[in-house]
Image (cartoon, rainbow, N blue to C red; front, top):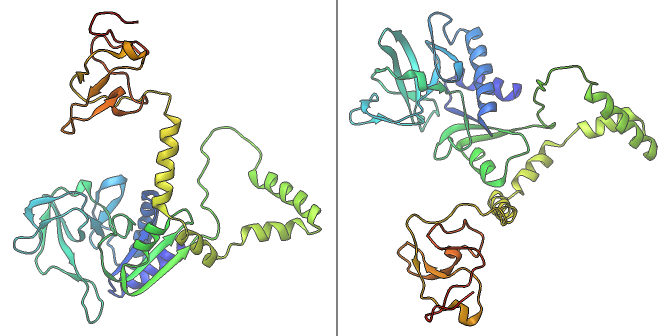
Length: 324
Protein backbone atom coordinates (compact mmCIF):
# COMPACT_ATOMS: atom_id res chain seq x y z
CA UNK A 1 0.00 0.00 0.00
CA UNK A 2 2.89 2.34 0.73
CA UNK A 3 4.46 1.66 -2.66
CA UNK A 4 1.17 2.15 -4.51
CA UNK A 5 0.44 5.38 -2.63
CA UNK A 6 3.92 6.75 -3.29
CA UNK A 7 3.65 5.95 -7.00
CA UNK A 8 0.28 7.68 -7.25
CA UNK A 9 1.56 10.80 -5.46
CA UNK A 10 4.59 11.01 -7.76
CA UNK A 11 2.56 10.57 -10.93
CA UNK A 12 -0.33 12.88 -10.03
CA UNK A 13 2.11 15.57 -8.82
CA UNK A 14 3.63 15.47 -12.30
CA UNK A 15 0.19 15.89 -13.87
CA UNK A 16 -0.09 12.34 -15.23
CA UNK A 17 -3.61 10.98 -15.63
CA UNK A 18 -3.38 8.04 -13.22
CA UNK A 19 -5.94 5.70 -11.69
CA UNK A 20 -5.33 3.72 -8.50
CA UNK A 21 -7.62 0.73 -7.95
CA UNK A 22 -8.27 -1.49 -4.93
CA UNK A 23 -10.42 -4.52 -4.27
CA UNK A 24 -12.82 -3.07 -1.70
CA UNK A 25 -13.93 0.17 -0.11
CA UNK A 26 -11.86 -0.30 3.05
CA UNK A 27 -8.63 -0.41 1.04
CA UNK A 28 -9.83 2.44 -1.16
CA UNK A 29 -10.48 4.69 1.83
CA UNK A 30 -7.13 3.87 3.42
CA UNK A 31 -5.24 4.55 0.18
CA UNK A 32 -7.04 7.88 -0.30
CA UNK A 33 -6.26 8.90 3.28
CA UNK A 34 -2.56 8.15 2.89
CA UNK A 35 -2.35 9.94 -0.44
CA UNK A 36 -4.09 13.04 0.89
CA UNK A 37 -1.72 13.19 3.86
CA UNK A 38 1.25 13.07 1.48
CA UNK A 39 -0.23 15.74 -0.78
CA UNK A 40 -0.82 18.00 2.22
CA UNK A 41 2.80 17.59 3.31
CA UNK A 42 3.98 18.38 -0.22
CA UNK A 43 1.82 21.50 -0.38
CA UNK A 44 -0.40 20.33 -3.25
CA UNK A 45 -3.45 20.32 -0.93
CA UNK A 46 -4.11 23.30 1.33
CA UNK A 47 -4.30 22.92 5.08
CA UNK A 48 -6.71 25.85 5.39
CA UNK A 49 -10.51 25.65 5.52
CA UNK A 50 -11.83 22.13 4.99
CA UNK A 51 -15.25 20.54 4.62
CA UNK A 52 -16.48 17.18 5.83
CA UNK A 53 -17.46 14.73 3.08
CA UNK A 54 -18.55 11.10 3.07
CA UNK A 55 -16.91 8.57 5.41
CA UNK A 56 -15.93 11.42 7.72
CA UNK A 57 -13.03 12.47 5.49
CA UNK A 58 -11.86 16.07 5.16
CA UNK A 59 -11.43 17.87 1.84
CA UNK A 60 -9.89 21.26 1.13
CA UNK A 61 -8.63 23.29 -1.79
CA UNK A 62 -6.51 21.14 -4.11
CA UNK A 63 -8.22 17.88 -3.14
CA UNK A 64 -9.74 15.55 -5.70
CA UNK A 65 -13.17 14.19 -4.82
CA UNK A 66 -15.48 11.78 -6.59
CA UNK A 67 -19.19 12.42 -7.09
CA UNK A 68 -21.42 9.54 -5.93
CA UNK A 69 -24.79 10.50 -7.40
CA UNK A 70 -26.21 11.89 -10.62
CA UNK A 71 -27.37 15.48 -10.90
CA UNK A 72 -28.50 16.17 -14.45
CA UNK A 73 -29.79 19.61 -13.49
CA UNK A 74 -26.25 20.76 -12.67
CA UNK A 75 -24.12 21.81 -15.62
CA UNK A 76 -20.74 20.24 -14.90
CA UNK A 77 -18.34 22.61 -16.63
CA UNK A 78 -19.60 22.04 -20.17
CA UNK A 79 -22.88 23.01 -21.86
CA UNK A 80 -25.37 20.17 -21.74
CA UNK A 81 -23.17 17.94 -19.56
CA UNK A 82 -24.73 17.07 -16.22
CA UNK A 83 -22.93 15.75 -13.17
CA UNK A 84 -22.69 11.96 -13.19
CA UNK A 85 -21.92 9.35 -10.59
CA UNK A 86 -18.18 8.66 -10.66
CA UNK A 87 -17.10 12.06 -11.98
CA UNK A 88 -13.75 13.21 -10.61
CA UNK A 89 -13.71 16.80 -9.36
CA UNK A 90 -10.93 19.14 -8.22
CA UNK A 91 -11.68 21.67 -5.50
CA UNK A 92 -10.63 25.20 -6.47
CA UNK A 93 -12.35 27.13 -3.67
CA UNK A 94 -14.64 26.67 -0.65
CA UNK A 95 -17.58 29.09 -0.46
CA UNK A 96 -20.58 29.41 1.87
CA UNK A 97 -22.78 27.96 -0.88
CA UNK A 98 -20.60 24.95 -1.63
CA UNK A 99 -17.43 23.99 -3.46
CA UNK A 100 -16.15 25.60 -6.63
CA UNK A 101 -14.83 22.66 -8.63
CA UNK A 102 -13.68 21.59 -12.09
CA UNK A 103 -14.47 18.20 -13.61
CA UNK A 104 -11.75 15.90 -14.93
CA UNK A 105 -11.71 15.28 -18.67
CA UNK A 106 -10.03 12.54 -20.67
CA UNK A 107 -6.25 12.65 -20.65
CA UNK A 108 -4.39 14.55 -23.32
CA UNK A 109 -3.78 11.94 -26.05
CA UNK A 110 -0.28 13.24 -26.76
CA UNK A 111 1.17 13.98 -23.33
CA UNK A 112 -1.05 11.77 -21.16
CA UNK A 113 -1.56 14.62 -18.71
CA UNK A 114 -4.82 15.05 -16.85
CA UNK A 115 -7.12 17.79 -18.11
CA UNK A 116 -9.91 19.71 -16.37
CA UNK A 117 -12.86 21.72 -17.60
CA UNK A 118 -12.11 25.37 -18.31
CA UNK A 119 -15.23 26.49 -16.47
CA UNK A 120 -15.76 26.13 -12.74
CA UNK A 121 -19.14 25.26 -11.30
CA UNK A 122 -20.69 25.25 -7.84
CA UNK A 123 -21.02 21.83 -6.22
CA UNK A 124 -23.46 22.29 -3.33
CA UNK A 125 -24.19 18.65 -2.43
CA UNK A 126 -20.61 17.72 -1.67
CA UNK A 127 -21.45 15.88 1.56
CA UNK A 128 -22.01 12.67 -0.43
CA UNK A 129 -18.70 12.92 -2.30
CA UNK A 130 -15.67 10.77 -1.49
CA UNK A 131 -11.96 11.33 -1.81
CA UNK A 132 -11.12 10.49 -5.41
CA UNK A 133 -7.54 9.31 -5.19
CA UNK A 134 -8.39 5.60 -5.23
CA UNK A 135 -11.39 3.73 -6.60
CA UNK A 136 -12.68 0.18 -6.47
CA UNK A 137 -12.34 -2.18 -9.40
CA UNK A 138 -16.07 -1.89 -10.11
CA UNK A 139 -15.94 1.91 -10.25
CA UNK A 140 -12.97 1.69 -12.64
CA UNK A 141 -14.91 -0.18 -15.31
CA UNK A 142 -15.05 1.83 -18.51
CA UNK A 143 -12.34 4.27 -17.40
CA UNK A 144 -9.30 4.87 -19.62
CA UNK A 145 -6.22 6.66 -18.27
CA UNK A 146 -2.56 7.06 -19.08
CA UNK A 147 -1.30 4.94 -16.16
CA UNK A 148 -3.16 2.32 -14.16
CA UNK A 149 -2.06 1.18 -10.69
CA UNK A 150 -3.72 -1.94 -9.27
CA UNK A 151 -3.48 -3.09 -5.67
CA UNK A 152 -3.78 -6.91 -5.64
CA UNK A 153 -4.35 -8.62 -2.28
CA UNK A 154 -4.56 -12.18 -3.67
CA UNK A 155 -8.27 -12.59 -2.95
CA UNK A 156 -9.44 -11.16 -6.29
CA UNK A 157 -10.56 -13.21 -9.28
CA UNK A 158 -9.71 -13.08 -12.95
CA UNK A 159 -12.57 -10.74 -13.89
CA UNK A 160 -11.70 -8.08 -11.31
CA UNK A 161 -7.98 -8.32 -12.05
CA UNK A 162 -8.65 -7.87 -15.78
CA UNK A 163 -10.41 -4.56 -15.10
CA UNK A 164 -7.67 -3.35 -12.77
CA UNK A 165 -4.83 -4.27 -15.12
CA UNK A 166 -6.21 -2.85 -18.36
CA UNK A 167 -7.16 0.76 -17.56
CA UNK A 168 -3.89 2.34 -18.59
CA UNK A 169 -3.07 3.03 -22.22
CA UNK A 170 0.67 3.41 -21.57
CA UNK A 171 1.41 1.64 -18.32
CA UNK A 172 -0.28 -0.83 -15.96
CA UNK A 173 1.41 -1.82 -12.72
CA UNK A 174 0.27 -4.36 -10.14
CA UNK A 175 1.23 -3.91 -6.48
CA UNK A 176 0.81 -7.37 -5.01
CA UNK A 177 0.47 -8.34 -1.36
CA UNK A 178 3.08 -10.93 -0.47
CA UNK A 179 1.40 -11.45 2.89
CA UNK A 180 -2.35 -11.53 3.58
CA UNK A 181 -3.60 -8.24 5.06
CA UNK A 182 -4.20 -8.41 8.80
CA UNK A 183 -7.08 -6.54 10.37
CA UNK A 184 -7.07 -5.30 13.96
CA UNK A 185 -8.82 -7.50 16.53
CA UNK A 186 -10.89 -5.14 18.66
CA UNK A 187 -12.19 -7.74 21.12
CA UNK A 188 -11.49 -6.60 24.70
CA UNK A 189 -9.28 -8.51 27.13
CA UNK A 190 -5.74 -9.89 27.07
CA UNK A 191 -4.78 -13.05 25.20
CA UNK A 192 -1.56 -14.68 23.98
CA UNK A 193 0.09 -13.13 20.97
CA UNK A 194 -0.83 -15.19 17.88
CA UNK A 195 2.73 -14.92 16.56
CA UNK A 196 3.99 -17.00 19.51
CA UNK A 197 1.61 -19.86 18.80
CA UNK A 198 2.41 -19.60 15.11
CA UNK A 199 6.16 -19.72 15.81
CA UNK A 200 5.73 -22.79 18.03
CA UNK A 201 3.70 -24.54 15.35
CA UNK A 202 6.31 -23.76 12.70
CA UNK A 203 9.08 -24.85 15.06
CA UNK A 204 7.45 -28.26 15.41
CA UNK A 205 7.13 -28.52 11.64
CA UNK A 206 10.74 -27.42 11.21
CA UNK A 207 11.93 -30.07 13.68
CA UNK A 208 10.19 -32.74 11.66
CA UNK A 209 11.85 -31.49 8.49
CA UNK A 210 15.27 -30.94 10.05
CA UNK A 211 15.19 -27.16 9.51
CA UNK A 212 15.23 -24.23 11.91
CA UNK A 213 12.09 -22.39 12.97
CA UNK A 214 13.45 -19.09 11.68
CA UNK A 215 13.96 -20.58 8.23
CA UNK A 216 10.43 -22.00 8.20
CA UNK A 217 8.90 -18.71 9.33
CA UNK A 218 10.80 -16.90 6.60
CA UNK A 219 9.68 -19.39 3.97
CA UNK A 220 6.03 -19.05 4.99
CA UNK A 221 6.20 -15.27 5.12
CA UNK A 222 7.93 -14.92 1.75
CA UNK A 223 5.49 -15.09 -1.18
CA UNK A 224 6.27 -14.63 -4.81
CA UNK A 225 4.20 -11.67 -6.13
CA UNK A 226 4.17 -13.20 -9.61
CA UNK A 227 2.82 -16.44 -8.14
CA UNK A 228 0.11 -14.56 -6.23
CA UNK A 229 -0.91 -12.72 -9.39
CA UNK A 230 -0.94 -15.98 -11.33
CA UNK A 231 -3.33 -17.48 -8.76
CA UNK A 232 -5.62 -14.47 -9.10
CA UNK A 233 -5.64 -14.68 -12.89
CA UNK A 234 -6.39 -18.40 -12.70
CA UNK A 235 -9.41 -17.90 -10.44
CA UNK A 236 -12.67 -17.64 -12.39
CA UNK A 237 -15.07 -15.47 -10.42
CA UNK A 238 -18.08 -16.44 -12.54
CA UNK A 239 -17.59 -20.14 -11.85
CA UNK A 240 -17.08 -19.44 -8.15
CA UNK A 241 -20.26 -17.36 -8.02
CA UNK A 242 -22.26 -20.11 -9.73
CA UNK A 243 -20.84 -22.73 -7.37
CA UNK A 244 -21.61 -20.63 -4.31
CA UNK A 245 -25.14 -20.00 -5.54
CA UNK A 246 -25.68 -23.73 -6.03
CA UNK A 247 -24.31 -24.56 -2.58
CA UNK A 248 -26.56 -21.92 -1.05
CA UNK A 249 -29.57 -23.32 -2.88
CA UNK A 250 -28.80 -26.83 -1.62
CA UNK A 251 -28.29 -25.52 1.91
CA UNK A 252 -31.71 -23.83 1.76
CA UNK A 253 -33.44 -26.82 0.18
CA UNK A 254 -35.27 -27.74 3.38
CA UNK A 255 -35.89 -24.24 4.69
CA UNK A 256 -38.87 -23.42 2.44
CA UNK A 257 -37.78 -19.94 1.32
CA UNK A 258 -40.60 -17.66 0.31
CA UNK A 259 -40.93 -17.59 -3.47
CA UNK A 260 -44.68 -17.81 -3.93
CA UNK A 261 -45.74 -15.28 -6.59
CA UNK A 262 -48.19 -12.58 -5.69
CA UNK A 263 -51.83 -13.47 -6.17
CA UNK A 264 -53.44 -16.89 -5.67
CA UNK A 265 -52.59 -19.43 -8.40
CA UNK A 266 -55.44 -21.11 -10.25
CA UNK A 267 -56.20 -24.56 -8.86
CA UNK A 268 -55.90 -27.45 -11.28
CA UNK A 269 -58.89 -29.72 -11.88
CA UNK A 270 -59.48 -32.20 -9.00
CA UNK A 271 -58.88 -35.89 -9.29
CA UNK A 272 -55.55 -36.58 -7.65
CA UNK A 273 -57.06 -39.17 -5.34
CA UNK A 274 -57.82 -41.43 -8.30
CA UNK A 275 -54.11 -41.91 -8.86
CA UNK A 276 -53.31 -41.80 -5.13
CA UNK A 277 -51.01 -38.90 -5.84
CA UNK A 278 -50.80 -37.11 -2.50
CA UNK A 279 -48.66 -34.26 -3.80
CA UNK A 280 -50.03 -30.73 -3.68
CA UNK A 281 -52.23 -30.00 -6.68
CA UNK A 282 -50.89 -28.78 -9.96
CA UNK A 283 -51.32 -25.07 -10.46
CA UNK A 284 -50.62 -22.34 -12.97
CA UNK A 285 -48.18 -19.66 -11.97
CA UNK A 286 -49.55 -16.15 -11.95
CA UNK A 287 -47.13 -15.14 -14.71
CA UNK A 288 -47.41 -14.92 -18.47
CA UNK A 289 -46.01 -18.43 -18.99
CA UNK A 290 -49.27 -20.23 -18.06
CA UNK A 291 -47.36 -23.46 -17.53
CA UNK A 292 -48.62 -26.17 -15.18
CA UNK A 293 -46.11 -26.71 -12.41
CA UNK A 294 -46.04 -28.66 -9.17
CA UNK A 295 -45.73 -26.84 -5.85
CA UNK A 296 -45.74 -23.49 -7.54
CA UNK A 297 -42.94 -24.41 -9.92
CA UNK A 298 -40.20 -24.84 -7.33
CA UNK A 299 -40.04 -28.64 -7.12
CA UNK A 300 -41.17 -28.63 -3.51
CA UNK A 301 -38.46 -26.24 -2.37
CA UNK A 302 -40.38 -22.99 -2.21
CA UNK A 303 -42.73 -21.65 0.41
CA UNK A 304 -46.02 -23.37 0.91
CA UNK A 305 -48.72 -21.76 -1.27
CA UNK A 306 -50.97 -19.47 0.68
CA UNK A 307 -54.29 -20.10 -1.02
CA UNK A 308 -57.17 -21.55 1.07
CA UNK A 309 -57.44 -25.29 1.48
CA UNK A 310 -53.83 -26.18 0.75
CA UNK A 311 -52.23 -28.77 3.01
CA UNK A 312 -48.89 -30.52 2.45
CA UNK A 313 -49.30 -34.18 1.51
CA UNK A 314 -53.05 -33.95 1.05
CA UNK A 315 -54.88 -35.86 -1.68
CA UNK A 316 -57.44 -33.72 -3.42
CA UNK A 317 -60.96 -35.05 -3.86
CA UNK A 318 -62.11 -36.56 -7.10
CA UNK A 319 -65.03 -35.20 -9.03
CA UNK A 320 -67.33 -37.55 -7.16
CA UNK A 321 -66.21 -36.03 -3.86
CA UNK A 322 -64.14 -38.95 -2.53
CA UNK A 323 -60.55 -38.61 -1.61
CA UNK A 324 -58.09 -38.89 1.22
